Length: 458
Image (cartoon, rainbow, N blue to C red; front, top):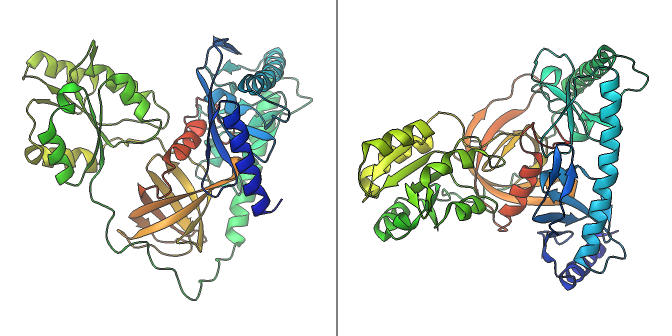
């Protein structure tokens, strides 16, 4: 099917889904649709017990198939055919049927592995089974994705190895094994063979020749020196002077008035700093600190609590909860700017989880490369062309699982020159999503996030 036919099919799919009452948005490029629909309260039977999901997010793959993106457990499912569906309930029935078949396969795999003495465990809410395979990193586990496929761990022999394709890490479950040691040996051998083959191919690779005329950077000026700041609670929300002061310093602000709305905001946008009232309705701002750590792709965000008046007991409670700071109202943006900069630019624990995912990228439309790590607001890329620190470029990222591309405007934060057969590495900070499709990036990362969750690509 050509691009014109794919675009026409995507538009038809969008209209068809909207006719079923499903929220559907045509993705950039016009070849796929991202859809969101409510689910019935009937729980899904997971391996660790039944669980109800409120909504399903999926992307179309061609005219008659969909790929589930969220919740994370359903990302494990293969493409699901929706030909003949005339309502959202019928789509949900197809998804539930696919999940039921998936569950039967996993339960059979669980019985088979336990029967030969494998210490297999169910990963909560993920739809996968995990078991150790005895590599040097004792925390590394293989993951049984269904009845026949196993995802090898990215740690151990594959640590730091960028595979040609993410699917290379998925192998057939060994057959004919009689003991747990047999399956450990079989999978470890596959890990080592894959690592050797990848390193050997990389050593023989020849760098692509430079084009005659490299495209100019996206802009010669920075895309704003500020950071994204989320303000939570009525006290901060009404503080127009603080909001104006933060914006004057270059920061981009957003206000939410409840903890739930603050957490929901991270489904469509990522923030680098959170300021929260100590009292938010019936809730406490302290609750945000652990709640943010549970969000997909978040490692540890700095949270500053702002109290109506200074109280030593609340200051101590904030410190114990892990808050990055405690301030008393009113807050003057200019006076606290130095402290905010230390939090935003410090070299403490990283804010966003980094996923070792290889994706094809192009810089300014023609310079190829690939990612070695991705995160909510950053990328690490390898490219045969050197990048200058501080340079601004537009990158196109391929998302193969949903047959889509994503454009991001970035600033080069650091660079590591090429060494031996490896191309240069650059660390990029995402400054903007020019097509306003940051939710697509977040959905994609959510499906991949955290090795303890469903992740067929790690």
